[in-house]
Length: 352
Image 1 (tube, rainbow, N blue to C red):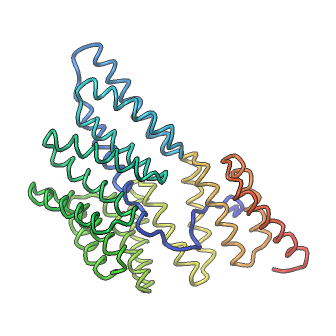
Image 2: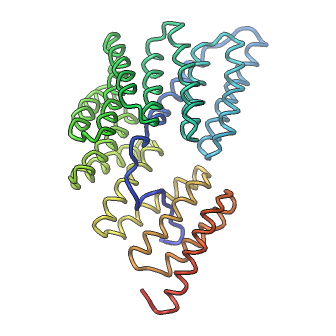
């Protein structure tokens, strides 16, 4: 296995906090729901052509998002949303707002994210779409979490939970409980977070929701890690990894690897970390996501440094450098060049 091809995300440093898998955690479900609900044929020929174009733009946006081209994805989804609006397709309009809001959140523009997601929620309320309200509220609550407005987030998730229970939506109940666990996690009450995650996990298993189950397992791994219960953390991350791999949920698969690598690094199991990171590299390459490849390679170099494998660290940083340039990350270019200079001096001096 060629270690120089390793890929890494931001690991070595701290665990992802509130943001990990939040807004985007159920994107796969939403995408499937969108495709399912957009199957209704339109008899009018002009409308059918417009509908096909909107559907194409939605798929195009999803491909752009997977490649890390979030701005382009937002543009595609906005174009699709306008067509759906003209066709009088409120469900599709709402789901397009979901994708747009999620991507703004990933870009760190939480004002735009909240605006889009509240519009999505408004569409759901106008059309008495209770399921849409559940997901809309959870997404708005997620933005509030990112903004560290924990009380407001908790109120929003509780409203979603109440609606889910009123219509007997176990899926919505599981999602809302999992997000309420994130509120407790954000407050540092990790034991309460675990209670909420465990309740969510039971529901997500009942409705056979593998994406939601993997996300909650990753949340459990985070909470157990913060409590210093490393075997439990590794067990939950491991379950999440197996499940996500099985259903090809790449987001949760990568997130589970994140947790496992942090855990293995903490006890100096660097070879195991590197094996896991090889898989991360494959996923990033499959998605043609240059930013993730860069981040992975950069951090993989740090893993090699920890392991005392300076020549391998140097080769990995050399692979990351052109990606940093291609992405226009000039501060990272300077940082990597400094790392390479220090590594070269250490190698020449005979350090291991």
